[in-house]
Each structure stands twice: as C-alpha cells, then as structure tokens.
Length: 224
Image 1 (cartoon, helix red, strand yellow):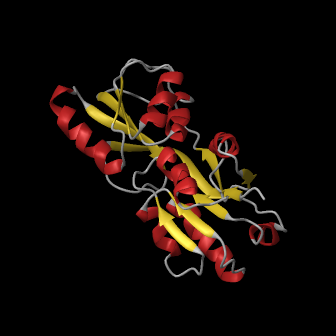
Image 2: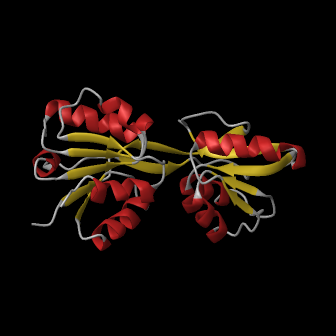
C-alpha cells in the first residue's frame, strides 16, 4: 500500500511539494495549516537601500507586488528562494544555501561592498535575526480546516512540516485528536520544537533546512 504523506505548508508551495512527493512514489494529501496573505501598502521606497535579503518566495512575491525595481543585489537563504528571485526578474542573486544564520553570516561577509541598508521583505513573524532592515510584506495565518481533517489525519503515515507556526497548529490538533502512529517530519529542529510532547511514531528533523533534505527523510526513515 502506498504511504500517505500530509502536506501542511501554505499554497502555492504545497502544490509543488505534493508533486515532488508523488514523484517519489508516495500519495500526497494536501491540507495546508497556514495561508499566506500579502500585506498591502504603498510602493516600496528604496532610497538608502543597497541590497535585498529574502528568506522565502512569499517575501519575493510581496516585494515585487509593491516595487518594480529589480536592479539591487539579492541575498537569499537557499537555492529555492534564489530560483524564485531569478524568476521574479532579479539578476544579481547569491544563495546562502542554508538557514537564516547562514544568510546573516553571508550578508556580514559582503557588508563592506553594500552601499546602503540591506532590506529584508518578510513575514510579520520571523525566526532568527538578520543584519537587515525588516519590511513586512506578508503574513501567515491559520487556515480554515476541513471538518473531517482529524479523521483523515488518522489514516496518514507521515506529515511534512515546513514552519514552526505550522507545527504549533499541528500540536494543538494532535493533542485533541491523537495519532500515535503518525511520523512527524520537520524541516529543522526549530520547527520540531513545538511537537516535543506530542505522542507520535517518530519525530525527525532534516539535517539541513531545505526541502530536499526534508523529503529525503521519507526515504531514510523507511516510510513506505
């Protein structure tokens, strides 16, 4: 029987993750715990800004919806975000290929060559600190969940968690509706932290905070 994997991340990323999970031979179940809402505002003023820092494709989308300038150098947390930046029209893109700390270190290394502030278009809630000026361009809010979600969860073999906020919502769901046979597969130890007291078959975190490492855990842990 094909293993069923619950995709909890917000759209549009959930759809892309589901395609990758299906290509690996699993059956994806897409039910986001979060949804992304763009924060509306005036056109973004780049006066005094020498570079941009992005930690997600959502930050890129929020920025590009309010600014047409694509000429500044861009620092990204990882390769997927770098690809999203290039798709958004940016040409000078450097990936830290890691987590927020790796991105912060990379910005510090390049700081002397940046003429002006580093602007970080980001979510209202962020994890980790960057040597940059934060600008809120989107927020994540709890998604409206289907009434039969708890019943569906009981039939899942594993759940993928991309964010700490999503993990907190899942923890609340599983406290009310235990699923002790479910494997909780997390993007990082930080994402896994809200789940430490949740009964589960297994709680694991990716060695690197990127989706490739996360999905590899489905194979490494023998989920089938």
